[in-house]
Image (tube, rainbow, N blue to C red; front, side, top):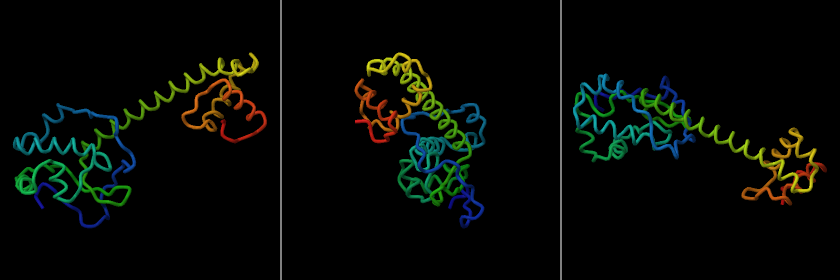
Length: 208
């Protein structure tokens, strides 16, 4: 192995990667790049242009790996991630500062041993936080829209005005529809009426 990568024998004492394999960054096509941190980094100063270019390619490749933000430990797979031949990869790794500068071993939640970079991990965690915030915001907007539409749907279903104004009832009905309305079915007047009837009689069957 090249001097720029220090491997730990066995799994004991290896950093536990905090991002699970099942968590993906699908639909998120960018990550933040701290150009000031990059500009002042020892790696940027000491690495040659070819190595720096491959390092940035690895940064991009790691976003598509499992877990996200990691790289494989096998050199042929590393070369593939860097989009170079194995011979070119070995030549780059033999340089005083190679493309895996700063990458270290970690153990993933599926038990596999991979490589991670502390800075890349920070970037990925921030991207995941951003994705989670967007998902939560979208879910909040969907819930608000459902509850805004529900009073009118209740009236069209033949229910009383008092029922359409009862916030507690509307929240219960919304939850019942979420749990019992088959995926893809719309909240038509007939569907809402059946849901109300099932709620009142304690039926937990799908609303058809």
